[in-house]
Image (cartoon, rainbow, N blue to C red; front, side, top):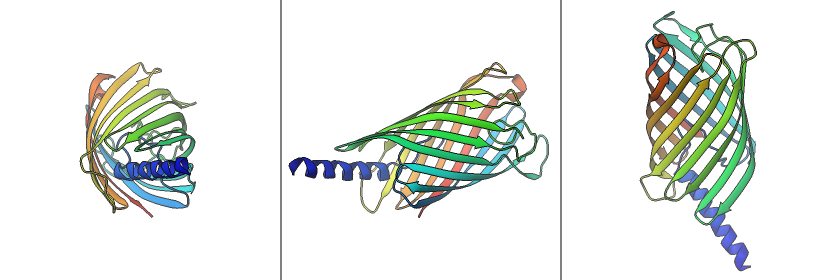
Length: 254
């Protein structure tokens, strides 16, 4: 009886941890908040490179059929100032995630998910990696996350396969979340995020190590995100080097 009470308290606190710290901004998170729920979200990226600037606006709908599975569709639009100034439909993406490990403790939780992201060649051939390439791509990865009442850590490792283009890529991510307010109900939180992304396009002999500094405001079931990403290592073709990316987003769960 005593064990069951402790376990229930631990799981309750773990759920408070998950709600207090919203999802990372440029990274991913294995936390799932319950079956039969939807999340509508967008995360606009304003990417500035030596080549020019692109504005990428995805409209995303995520659905959790169960407490440990997720399916989603991302309908994106992109506008550039270096090829065309028109707003173009970009590469459609289908996302699937399955949580295969969950360990809840008092005031902390650890989760792991398997993830796939299927990119369909629906956009223009703009060769904007991650936005509009008009090439089929399939990404497979593992996301893990450890969260306590004081901080959160997320990791991701995966491989992106593109059978008809030189876009094969090893990708790793590491993120740290720091909530600035004490957990409370209804949920109200300000989170800081410190996120690293490693990208190796071995067929092009390109490598980038990126750092993103972000802030998030979470209120009940809605969050607002802002992050600035810039390169620490930028070993790509000179006319394609990243200067910075600005991310602006919002999410609503229902």
